[in-house]
View 1 (cartoon, one colour):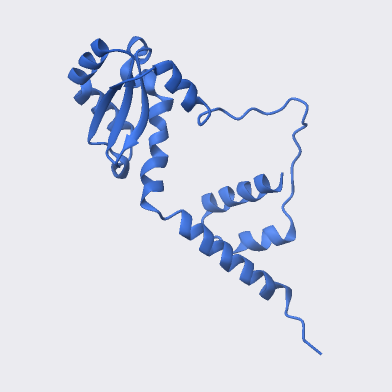
View 2: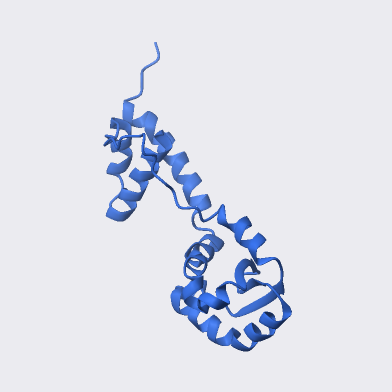
Length: 167
């Protein structure tokens, strides 16, 4: 008769495979570079000013160090090219050392279309009014997973991820 393994040995394999999955995704250099750059879109009005932000909008990254900015017309493109060093300095002041940019590239494009295209990535999550907020308790398995994590911030974020995956 086959002997049953203890509960914790079964889950150990699951934890190891999840650990391999997470470690294969998170340490990639591009994640560490691109994630902090979200602040560029969030604070674009503050970086370039309200009137200028209506004529241009950050679009995408070319390579790791160049931000491509969509500009409504050639006049604005000329003006922004003169101010590119100042804009770049303001952007880099908001970013950690590993995410800094070295140049800006301006291209003529429909800035309203670019805003609409990118807005789906930056939508703020809204709570549904019909759903009552319920405190969800972690399961025994989830608590067991969290016991091995010493870092409080990482433990909190991992718990939020587990609870999010549950819904």
